[in-house]
Image 1 (tube, rainbow, N blue to C red):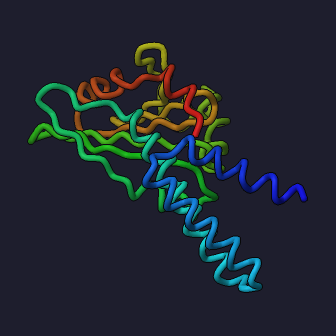
Image 2 (cartoon, one colour):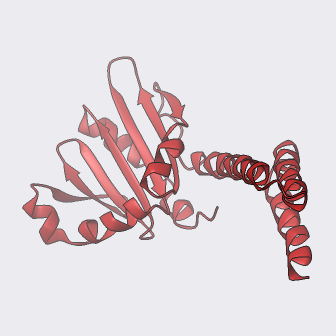
Length: 190
């Protein structure tokens, strides 16, 4: 009996969080999964659940991309949405990346959240002695701390969101990092 009450509540929660068109696609996949399961077709039920899961992951990624800053004046930003797909190999999570260019320079910023890979790096980033032993140094951008190695910056927000930036020009990387809303990012809840 609890299953019959939970499914409609779960579907209603998803519908409130998603755009109407995407919510319909997700609900359609969930309904198809349930119908297939009730008919005894477990393979189809699993396939439909996978589709619903992929659509929900797309929704999470879209909300995460919003934390990538706009391009600085005179620069262009290109969003790379393929980061999230690669995270499945590392235990999951949510990711987004942007490449910022001004014609002669480029800066890459990647955000990763709620990934086992990020959790394993949190200890290293929190330990200045390990960082110094690897040839890096601590740098503060606004109120956010980063480990810097050459022109690569790696920081942890709220102990669960990795911010990684790199580029050929240190000033350009800092310029982009300064535009990130770290307080908003810390409150990110998919």
